[in-house]
Length: 439
Image (tube, rainbow, N blue to C red; front, side):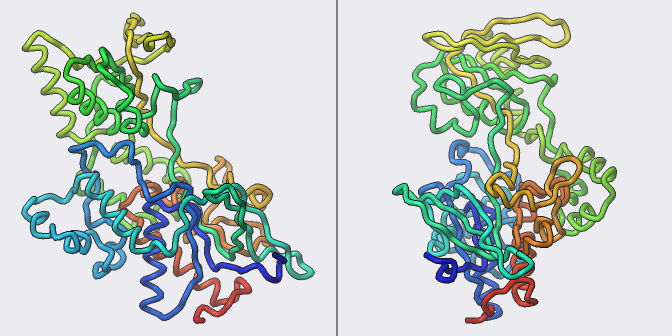
């Protein structure tokens, strides 16, 4: 297909997790409100919608209020709200009687699937983006008005989507310690439910990590395998409670994004350090108390299946035919203990993927800050060289510029509204040579 014949989208979204799902909703609601149509398509490599399926453990709950769903903070009357989902499922009164602000993770995932199903015409599943390249430059100035998104479809064929705006929401990638490779004996916690069916009558399981996922995995394994010993290994003396107090939660307010964005770099660093306990390496207090209760009760009974190896770290892992041999060092004394285990589960967290990895040649036209992070405008648009005139927006990977809500649900509904309005304003103002918004 020639350049002249290539259809040009107003927006292509890469990834269809909660962030770009919320963006698709915001696009639809704006169209219903204004009559303006933005031609958008979303590309998702998974064959169907899914969000951290490997950690949908029974009994786990969300750490954020259901009111911070995909839409309510931006549009409380939206038919895509969690409350509308409950009404549609016939559970609204039951949920009210449950007297909680924090639905189970399984139920919230069902809500996300419900919302995604209502927008199926906007997303192409089984579509893996393998490259993004600048479209042919227009005019004497060589301005790049569009990007070509190369997509590998489920049958292996390659197709190209041309777009005036790109929204990158590729999510988080699991982190393993340097040199550690996942296999049938060593897992990251994100694989837990996928891997568990292969685990039969384990004698000992080692869980590494001190955050919410680590504590949830420890509790789940301890209950799922009543004959197995579960060893929790972490560098602290105890799990740190998450700070979800009322005043601390103001760091997630929409106005806090404005404050953070305009703050000096040293203030940004200070605020992130002050409030790390709202999100990083922390555990819900109820879960901490439950694990301690089990640990103490087993001491009373004289049979300790739940072992808390605190102030400790793994210094070595060796595989053999029947399992793994883990060396655990007690940090205060240097004493080392050898644990023969069936499996090691690393609940060692996630990090945002570099949003520019897919951009290839176009990434050289995107600015970075001295620390290596992408330079972003307040509307989450990447700052680019003048010749790159199309918009590249980032969802996630913006904590360094926009604060702690970068990868969390708390501000998602507000953020996608800002991105949609930014794209529409740029198209209308002629920042891009686009079709008319109404067509």
